[in-house]
Amino acid sequence: MTEFQGELLDGCTPDSKPCRVQLGEGVLVVKLPGHPELQWHGSHLLEVREGVREIRVILKGTDERVNDPVLILPPGPETLRALESVRGR
Image (cartoon, rainbow, N blue to C red; front, top):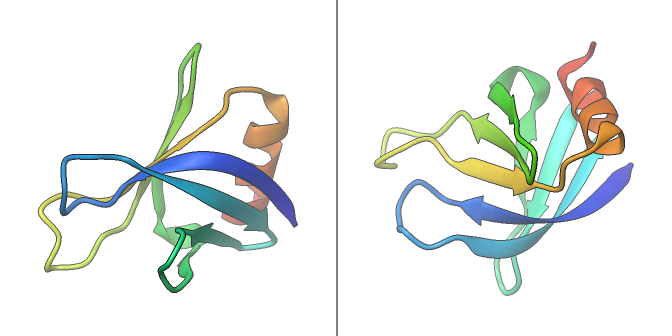
């Protein structure tokens, strides 16, 4: 499993929250300090947007959220390879 420092826009509040992100075969795990782990399977990664300064991953939300959560990760080939592993490609 590959681990990165990231930020999570949870879809409920306007502020991003720093988090640790673990990417492995078919699963993405977000660890927020003081909260239970959040998990998404590869099919719940709706979109990956690669930018110069960051990679944004749009995650499938639930009905009670205002927007789908967005995970912000560092740019680079290592991050993209780990995301492809989660997505099963």
